[in-house]
Amino acid sequence: MALETIKRSASGLTPVMSTLDVDGVPSLFGFGWLMAYVVLSGSPVAAVALGLFGGGLISDTETLGMIAGSRFGAAFVVLLAGTVHYLRGSRRIVTVAAGVLSLLVTWSIYAPATLGAYALLSTNALSGLRVEAPVFFVSFLGLVIAPVVSGVAGLLHPLALFVAGVAALIGAFNLFDRTLPEIDPQQGRFRQIADIVYRPKVMFLLGMAVTCLTLSVSVSLGILVPIAAKGYVRRENIIPYIMGANISTFIDTLFASLLVGEPRAMSVVAAEMLSVTAVSLVILFFFYRAYRRMLEAALEAAIASRRSFLVFLGITMAIPLIFLLA
Image (cartoon, rainbow, N blue to C red; front, top):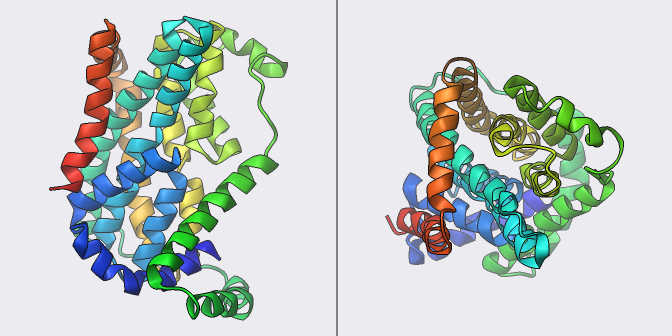
């Protein structure tokens, strides 16, 4: 219902997008990045991008840009959680380091992967990939969801309708998260995590598995904060976990692409997911040690002092604004 609401509001948002000068792939990239900061999650923002695409407001490549931006900003929640954990008395800088690493890994993987996904879309390499929702589900949308949304659309201005759709989407994701079991890293099998984290490939698979369970990279990466604070993992073992989580986080976005009524939506999401997977596997199997050393050097520079950490925070805010205003 939230996606259908966003689709219905898209046609009336053109003047607003023009006023904000949000047009083109770079601007949508920065817009998605900042929206992920605001809602502290990437999945709702990616779903909003698909809704706007289904409504015809943005193109496929612009949708890709906004989805990629949402993933760039999603890892910020780990940095926020780690900083709060640190300030509340943990005094273990590793909790902050987990957040910084989450951002650095995401940025370094998604930057080349997004360029590859853009090439796949531009060359129509995935033109044969057109998956649509089952007929019975489309009928359900038409009989139940569409009339409700049409009634609300007749009462609200398109901008208010869009805000209502985004609020409903965030609420839907939060509701879904509440139905999932809580994962306590100090109990059950998570207490044995120290026995397996010294293998990068195992942590890579673990990151994929936990994100498949939670369907939220913000949640699966957020688990790193208490785990790191307890000393269950070392900083270098966090890197492959984040790499794996950044792949399976697309599962809910793939599902959302089936609901927007635009067959090419699946191609947009698949292009990014395939590119992220390819880049991650190449690094993991061929360049992992060099990649880890590069990230550790960047991490040490970012948390060397309070001043350097503030500079890093400033960079995380400035880059999406630059893209938004591009």
